[in-house]
Length: 440
Image (cartoon, rainbow, N blue to C red):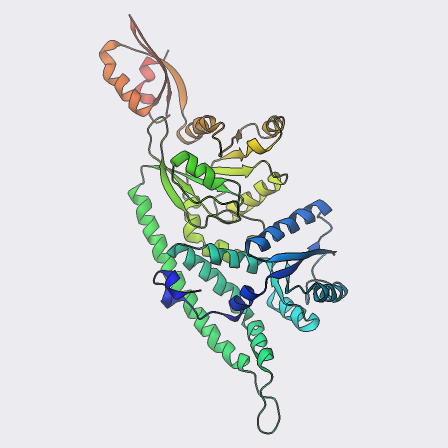
């Protein structure tokens, strides 16, 4: 990673770590997971499929996928010893560079697997961190990802320096006895360095949060809407359609790491700000949830959440649960939300009707071709502004009110008759007082 890529963040960056260099050279892997009694074979298969996609996003070729059924992970080695022995042999035969475990390993579990079975191992969290590291573009995202990396590495320093000592061999004094390894001497130094970096980055992130708070106060009158959803559900595509923002859209996991905000024009003319946010994922590392607090503040501060769901993915109900779990973790579960089933262009024509029966309040759309976006806008106005459709009869001496209604309401029908102006309007609950004497 080049220092100039960090836009002046040199003071917060450590020298390249050993684990970063290792990841760049290792390109093939086996995947492995534990299946608990509560998980079906289908659940395990889908979870492994997601891990495989994460690995591919990180540029790693998957050579084999394995699972072990057990009630709980082994405290020392996560998997059973027999399973790891067999896996080690298969990895050697396939010349796989590393094992990716579909969970977050404790530092001792990773250390024991590598020491006892000669398997280079990384976990799901490490893969996600690596993807975030490569996708971070702005100063804010880079700070947040760097913080998550450092907090992940801090308890794992011993494992990193054991690699260092092994590569260089044991150091012996003149009498031939082994001396303390360089790694052991460096661990305490590195702990202080990393702790200091964490403190500085936290301070920088607090500054960003303060700036965002100031920006929010400046636009206090505007209602705030946030797009949330599982990664790759189509949030950025919908954001672009609604705002013509031109945000990068890729068919990749975590294409969006930064919160982007634009004005959304509703028929009532009421000021609304729409924000696109980072996608969620199952087993999202707590390091990332904590580190991305500046970005997730946009979600916590929203008046309405648009929960985007990829209806073409057969696990969409599981993904809804996962997103709601993260919303609960960040204290945003009480914010009103509209569930939006996206990508209806990719499913059988009969399937939307099935989904609608199960989720009657949901809106089914295709963000790619704009299907039902008008229904989505109407639903947003209804939920966010309490819009009501009213029939009005306004006398001719109140034409100024008619002019105002054209600015603040949606005119559904307008008819000029002898005894007055007949209107059908969609109007915010906050503006109903203006016309309550003319309702018919």
